[in-house]
Length: 168
Image (cartoon, rainbow, N blue to C red; front, side, top):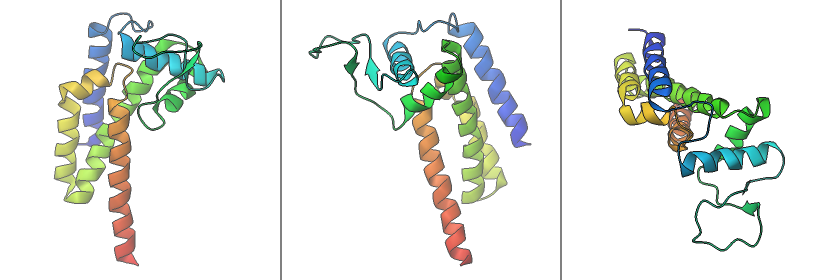
């Protein structure tokens, strides 16, 4: 089996979920977290900074709007803002989540291959490819798959660094 086939299968499942289960793909209508992520990324893309123009919760006192907000996930909102700089449409943020999800399938393959063998790489990629929660988070604007991608990049670099040190 080829990793490209696994990624295409993953793409098929994610696009099917995106267009059949998530409502209007052009509107940020998926609730608080998705709208909050869009708003913070938008404000970064237009130069306001990591602020929010609406208050997700009234548990905290805000003296002014836009208010400085907590940022969850290392660099996530800045990553999203790059897509909004291309065009301010919510579909670009969903496509960024799709891209991150497909990239994590590929990274699962490389990590498995570096740990043991190509077979383990294919198995790892298939597990991520068919994981329902991964499919769902690849179609909504949430930071979970982005955090997974950062962790995978860390471990892949760790394995590659180990190989470099062994060769020296």
